[in-house]
Length: 432
Image 1: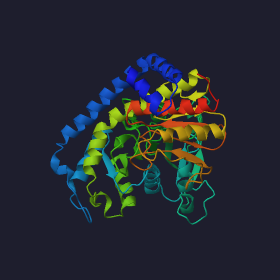
Image 2: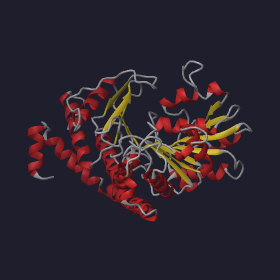
Image 3: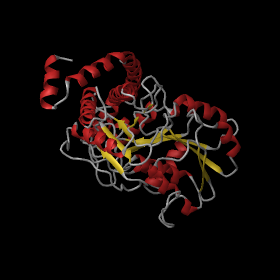
Image 4: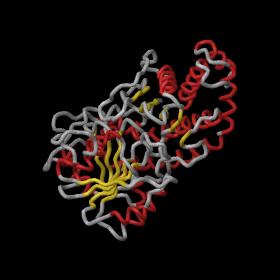
């Protein structure tokens, strides 16, 4: 770090020199971790570049479509690129998919029919899917899967974070239509499910049950590893464009990639039977979708570095973190147990204070739609709700863990963590 950088941080952000010296030491200690991240980034960058070259991407694909959106060559091209990047038969990449939850809901409601069973093999899904499935307190008649006679079972992960494949094989029945895997941690205190773990599940299930659809919630997991779940036999995956694959540029949207027959019925659910993928104006977002995807491997690597850096800092200070700095990672989320609600609020306010947008805002816990507990979110982002930008959030409940993710640049993530440490030190929660 330049001396003038230290002086700037001390003068303009009131960061103690002891904190800066401590963080410099931490950064030196994790240089090897960063090298591994960069190696995967390089491979993923090649993969994305080659996909764009293969389909002959040109300026004409950045055109603006309106109305029905018929013959939108940019929309068709971005879906071809996604299919190549994720090694699938087909893709659905649309600004009309408003979130990761929406993308997952489209998959479930598109594939499942009355009498089918949905089996989650990574425990309870993320909070926002509970209403979709019908396992929350949602009233009957609101359109959940349960309303349509679709049943649900779940199998928790083993204590070591692996899928309980023995229990899975025992639980599968003639009614089981779809097996659901949530790759990221969500608000659970566990590591993300790796692609290698997913591969083992596929290899165990598919020889015995080839017609069961295996689906992965891929949110927060894109470009973390050199392989994606669809590279190891998963039938369909879905995610959000304001997370990893949008590269911080996609202003909205979601993606679903997988088998052609599945994408067809999911597209019918998004639009209507008979329309499917053939319509849907993109209103000028194609260029941002392409450019965001092109930058995504680099942006994800930056976010991963922020996560590893944060893990090392807080582990060094005696806090429990998940994953640990040297653990294998499969998403960008870093959990940090802070012990109290007050500490979580202090943490999130500091991250908000480091934001380029709305840095003057003080986030507070509130009853967010789709969540069962009060949630605090720090997200001073250029794209509302973007969690590939530096952000932090937490449910206000035991074990009082904050979840740090994102960072378009590692340098910005560092500043956020400097402010967190200074805020905690000012309240005598930590000493450096």
